[in-house]
Image (tube, rainbow, N blue to C red):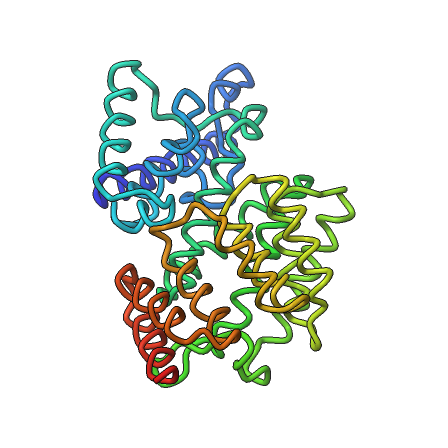
Length: 331
């Protein structure tokens, strides 16, 4: 796959060189029209658009592109989609079979078709960033580079600016998230380590999205991330924005985040009432959140059970050590 990716990038570069040399040679207009120079500012972004073919289901587009170009393993993709790894492996195989059977061409889409592929491309960049945010700085940097290239390519798309703002605002806290190799929660982070310049850049991108009348999922998430950079937190507003995001996505993961904001605004009992209704039995963050709310309510035995359930599901060493510290504190 690495060899194929590199060959594809080489081919794109050769096509660009051909187009440039053709113009320099001042060949007749009829010949020059047959040259199809790309408008993409970034070769990797061009490949992402090429892979996100609308003939595939949207989740298959995203999963296959993450596997082929994003460098993510099948297990990492499965966790992003909240499905078992064998299920994701089957989806990838089916997508590849469909490409072969339908003869789906591997070529760069013309400019007027880019919006049809934008939702899948945004999802790819977002999930690459999410994986990088857990500690793989190379993936986070790659997602930011793709996000900036997207904003250059499609400057009038509010969700593009919303996604870039979201990534910038989260990445600005990167230096404070890990101290001595240990994960530090947002409430405990040293704000002096936050990148103030990057926060302002993120907020500028968010303002651009608002100016374009953006109200989509990435714009709303960026607005929440911007509020998290304020002190003190405006928990009623954060909870309200999570409510809007839940309406847009119908996602139980979003509802879990709303539960945290509601708990901060109205108390742990109100948050726990939301958490206990969510169908996320195999999602580690549900159990770690539940453990924290139970701890605040003084129900330490139940909190310990919830933390241990989260520990059984965790894959990241830093998260595992954090949960072990939480359990030790209960004791």
